[in-house]
Length: 152
Image (cartoon, rainbow, N blue to C red; front, side, top):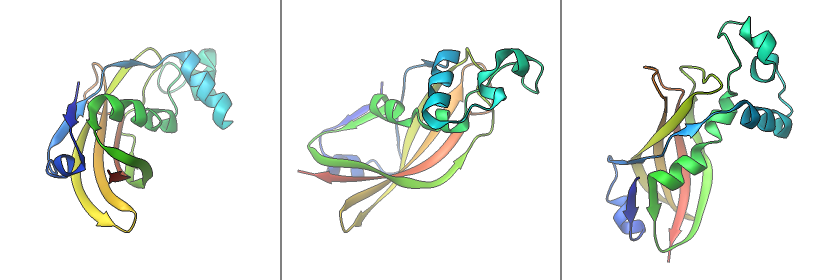
């Protein structure tokens, strides 16, 4: 489990440090299918196990955006900041998917606080997430994302 910060000031002082790592999350065909239904992305490589078995990865793989959509649960498990009145997803600077996530694999993410900056609506935090796949050398996703937080 990750770190707990009592307040935003304590969190900001951790710039440059690893915040924590989430638990393992199993990527199932059911989760992939639900994501496909939610987004309308029913490409065979994600939802057709029989066809995907003959494809380049030997089975179905998670959507890249599915992998990215795990960031909220990863962040919740990797760190927490107390005494906030607001926390918003503000965007992403860079997102890459170096290795596909095959159905049945487990992933977990590690968060590192890159920097913080004061902006008009609060404190902008730049956090780098690396989502690893159990037993695979390359990460599934490397994402630098932005959050805006406001303390009490």
